[in-house]
Image 1 (tube, rainbow, N blue to C red):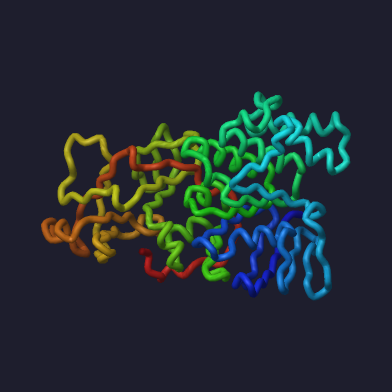
Image 2 (image 1 turned 45 degrees about the vertical axis):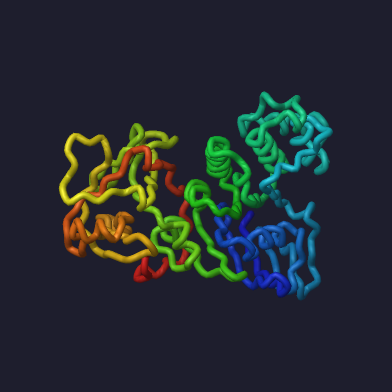
Length: 372
């Protein structure tokens, strides 16, 4: 059992929240800088003592302030992967990964075998004899992930693990983490600012503001029907669910969108694209390779210097597509609720990603909330 029940109060940091993670669930913790996300991970890991509350991992109480219980970090069965790999510079990659198993009492041979197995699992087996100074940022973070998993933790904590990587390295490591968590059904908590991290890896999204949980639910629900300012800010993109083809996504109602991404054909997937990438036409473009979606305008809302045009809900009941245009375009094109138009978006603006994979039931967000 690797679920988590954490009731954490830290007055000096303004934190007062109750976080739960089901056995085998992956939870993404989102929120602005300075709201306590990393502190929550550190408290679960045993690096920070709360003023009051408790932390239970599986069936074991590892922190209980009232009862005076505090299990040291190294005995909690928790691995924490942060932005910086923090590898031992004087040890080889293989020795870095074998360090945790050796500390847990494994023989040198058994620890080395486990090290090789996990290095292969994160596609870093060829790096075994290198020193950390000879690794790229992406390679070092892969080794850090292998080191964390080689300790065979019951709970994996990830604190912005891809933030310091370039786009290509982040995407590759994100896929690795996703695949390993799928295979292992290991409970995990990931702190992130990137909607793609939550979408690709997590089952559930939790939004923290001012040290409190203000929103939680299945990742798709939080991203498509946000109820907090922060969630609305990061989720202000179009999200369409379907089945992946060859650089395409096909919805249950027959809409096909062309895009780019690394998704296996036939797998459940989502397409993501920014409203700013959508052009609005009153007539269907001719001889265009771009995605053309017929839309009936449901809402026209001023958002700063732009106007958001939102179409009616998709046939599956999820929020319809949105486009951001100038006020002049609204007047020139006569854009108003009830008008039939065409949303057009280039294939390179549409990102195709694996769908969230193991939805764990949570309270559904209020769908009457304004989707901004």
